[in-house]
Image (tube, rainbow, N blue to C red):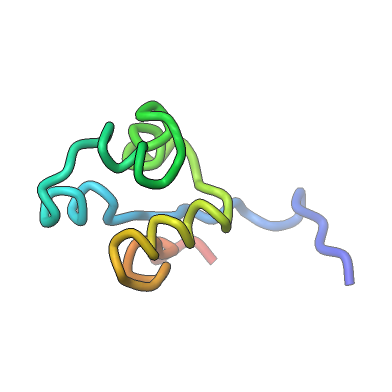
Length: 79
């Protein structure tokens, strides 16, 4: 089955990355090093300008010892 992306609205993905970083008292730079990306990538994810790959989402979840749904969610009203 093939889904045509031009027919579907883009999903708005929200994240709690900033909150989790604050709870764990780590900087963007520290988190970036732990999961193997640049600080700019963490900034872009936190700001909502970039949705991470599935692999990176799993790395972030593993780092925070949680599941992906705790970090990322689809904002309501965007079906």
